[in-house]
Length: 410
Image (cartoon, rainbow, N blue to C red; front, side):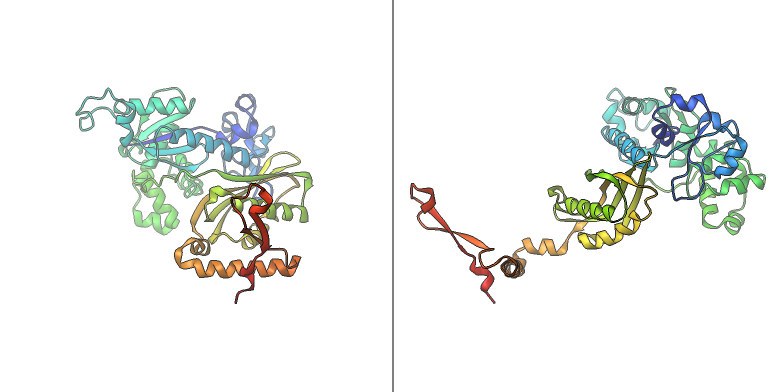
């Protein structure tokens, strides 16, 4: 059984600084600077005007001229959602998160951990799923107060159950047979098929049951791969969960003395990369994916996720890749942040330096470093400690500094 935890309008709540403003007036997340003009999450008051996430801003303002557009805060959303996922993982859940505010995890393996009062044969009896998951549900509510919780055999069924319940109410259970009367608009919660909802409604397909009743070949011919996925979801089929790997939070930030832009941002980015690669916690590993964030002077934040074509540990190549994304910054920034999202394998050259087989390579690099230091700073740039009289009571007689001879080798 899969549990879905849903925090409605999470991004809008973080950007607005609380939920009081959401209940007062129609509000929606404004489009991110430099992106297409589609609004983000909307408040409950805005939904009464027929406004939904992903709608064009012009159409949304035409339906509700007094719609309040809240500047997005992707940096704050990412940090707040990471804290929420960490709390879920603290109860033993292997969490998959498709978007901020929605998380799913497999709960069968957690029943014995959180409910020791279950009878011995309860795992194989016909107990109601919500009753058998009582301990897991209580632990989930404890770490995420105010969340909507639903159960189902698949990810989509659990999400439909969570969307149909209310916070602080008993969790609902939705099976594949319960999807038929549900609205097809629920597909908007899956980014892969969200664009199909409007087309399906124009064709008169209002429920998931009507979509599931269509021939699969006809759906594939009309909508392609997204249509096949939507048809599978309506029939109660979904892909297995892919839980994320709880990673180490490795980040570096830099406050800019003035509103940074242009060359100043490039130098700040290079400094952040050097600091990140020098962190001891990296342990010689390469970086596969990083997140570049900025806090803008005019208010709001900017966030860009970068996945390298191959795992990198080269500062120059990282500057080239991240510098192109930094050019997309919509406004001057006063804080720049670089965070590792996913590590790659250990760097092959770094691993060779510490292997027994890399001794010759290590000595050659040491000699080359000494030659370069002497060429830049003179013959006394590289010295070594030579013990003269270790037992002497005078510290100055125990050892002396002499020129390092290793750099003069072949």
